Image 1 (cartoon, rainbow, N blue to C red):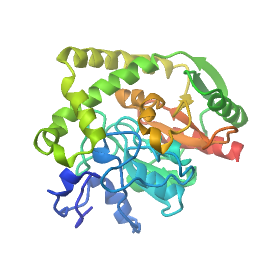
Image 2: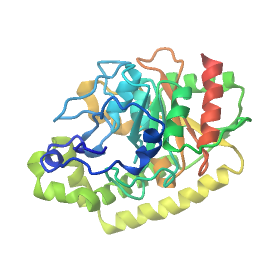
Image 3: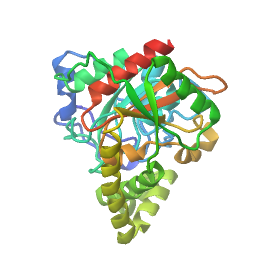
Image 4: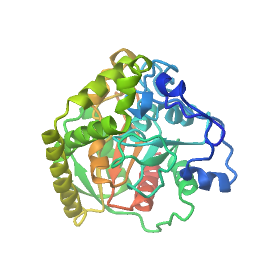
Length: 343
């Protein structure tokens, strides 16, 4: 943001940061609309993590469950809209960093199609997977936020009707909540089988490899200004072999073809954002094992996460709807149907 330093939630970056000379390009729509910015939000250090726990600036309180992590990396915007401190929030999503905190904090978040929203001036992480997306307490707010990012966003009068249900190894209460929401929304639900877990793992490798190329100098030159979790992840990134990256890129190519084929049969794919409730604050590292988001970034397609009514869980289950390239309007229309049917 013009006139303000970007610290990326990191002491090493903060010590070198200068006030920005201009806004990031993605803020142009909000500026033109006269949106009132109420603050810059906290995040997981460097955007490089999924718990939202920050050793330098404190951890945002999860408004839905204060004893649990807010999710990352865009923890601050999710906590702000979930706690009614802001109507909308903007975050980045490279491996799930909008959808994961949305799921943790009981709000809605949208990962946009790769390249749809300009990232000029946005803190970089993994350039082939970085995206900007909105967060809000409900789908109307999410639609408004998306229109501030892209004022020309189209509307869809006829929402999708056919949804592919992907089943993963999830908490039964999460699966029940998702199945009930899809049924109440009246979708024609078709069971689909996809190589999601393999694509998720490929995404982890690609993300780590690109982060090392983009930000690895921080680990080399300023390790004292990085938190323990971030140093550990940089070590993992440095240790990756060229062969591992080549294999991950091969998986990415096959995965994109697999998704293209499934979207010939269904309009959207539905699955959990998190397969279990968000981790307790003292068990933050467990978040890496319960997210199911990075496969979306590998493909570059958009995905929307939203809370649905649940029983037996500390926060609402999060339904993740995934669409083909450029289908943000379709996702918002489908989410509005789910929200109305389950309210």
